[in-house]
Length: 211
Image (tube, rainbow, N blue to C red; front, side, top):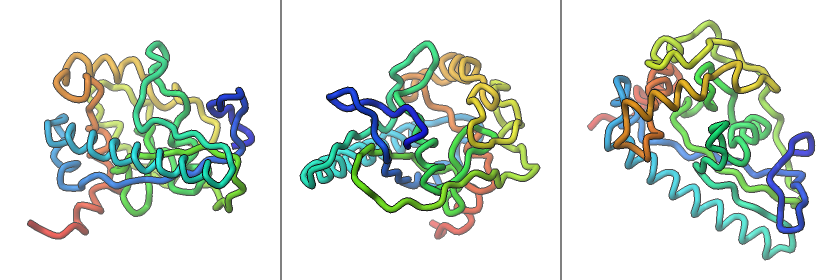
């Protein structure tokens, strides 16, 4: 994280490293939201976020017992309502950790679970081994997420490290659509249609046991 402006600790210092992890969503639930979110998805979203928060807090606490600085990033917390973003993008840490790449839907895509994951991040100054970052897009010519987006908020651009978010996503158009059409779910901030259309996610569903 040395090339990035991370959140600051109590003494206003940045962190040189981040520990990034992904927890999978239930694929059967994810497959049900191709026409819009539902209560099962909202519940799953909240459940996984809660799990991430507990894991992140435990990791941060353990790191501190070993004499290092640490800070857990909230699983899903919009701290800038104007720019519609949190304190730091989890997916930036995740790509640097080699967990996946950013798809045309502006979400992290993993080979194992597609985009059907939620992300956790813990910042630290502990000297940790780091894997090679992923700096390549593996979506090819696929644009199913772009076609599926009801808000027309996705540009269809191909991701590369350093590409500004606004070149991939019109965050205001996305947020306005969710607020207008899906108010019952997660404080008007749930949609997931673009994610549900991703072939990398649908592969997970085909691998899942029936029943």
